Image (cartoon, rainbow over all chains, first blue to last red; front, side):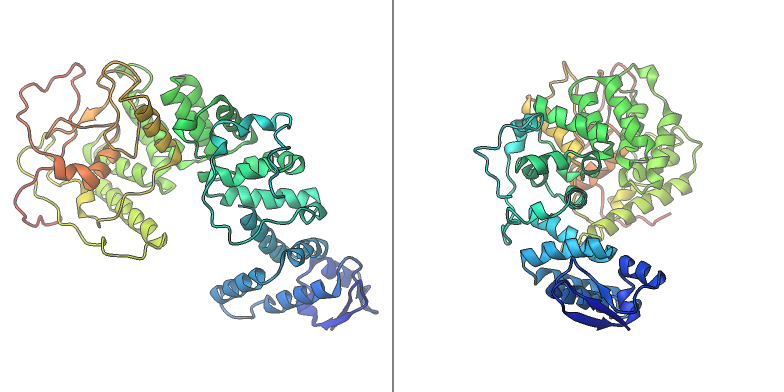
Length: 113
Length: 372
């Protein structure tokens, strides 16, 4: 179990498989610096919660078929307001979660057009 | 980034393509508000570029993309990044012939320089057929074709088959077939049809009727698959059409009707913006501007003009319509000409270049022709 600490002091405990979707965290785990939890200074608690929700759904081979996952993604991304969306982009970039980044950027592109 | 058009007209270079056609607005249902002014500022440039890349590749009309260019200096600068321009989708480059202007031309040129294949193809077609700049147009299309752009390969094949831009002796059938084959292997429906007919007739390749038929069937199948996958809900048009029997009026004597008759009655495929441009261009300029007696391909979705007299071949039955390629003939027959075609007493077949007549089909009795 890995502990993540957001910038405003909230802690989240999640399974390693869920956390490893973030390349940044994966590298930290490899370099073995996770004993006291991982501080994420750029990410607030609210955003981190959303990210964890996304990652839990997308854990390898879980969550159902491709179609269901797509539907879930669509709902996920359509139910958030703009500032959360942009913060998610920045956080996904920082944490290096490619799929989330693609999802959010595509959403913004669709909003612009 | 709500566009503040009153103050933002003045940016270096980018101001050029705000003129002309780019003013056109798409009617996009504004169900969401655009991102607020400070939100995009918080995102670093490279992320904005990646957002704009996605926007470019999913834009449904040019205005979607051009709006960004007109929003603010930062976005305009980032949007003209080569990465973004090279990903512009086919629909985003869909210039309208009425709105053609120097700035549109320059914009396309910028996209070409950024490496966009669609822009290379579109600009190549425009330069070759409309602006009469044959060499340049062909080389642009070749640029796209080298990178395996199927429509570009097919267009070059048509040019080779007809010897467009040169004399009758510039026809290079084998090169045409080679190009057609490459386009066909990429799945281009018109190229598949063209190749099928070439094989059936031994035109530019050794004759091989079974292979030819195989390609024609594949073309029908792909066309149907494309239509189905685009999710048209009402299937009332989806009926199998019975082929009309041919009668003795066949010059080549290949007894089978155009295989498109055996397909399903699919609606017309969506035309490429470049073809629409050509069709509009010549319509706007009144009939065929290309010159005296030069005709247009009678297939409305094609729009190609002749580049010399009697370049295109005509329907052998009625002699009224003419086509740039067999694929256009097949498609037009299915969509429209079948209803209008009626045999005319052909006394005088010769017309200068001794054209090979493409066979049409004749309405006969409604007898089922067994598939051979």
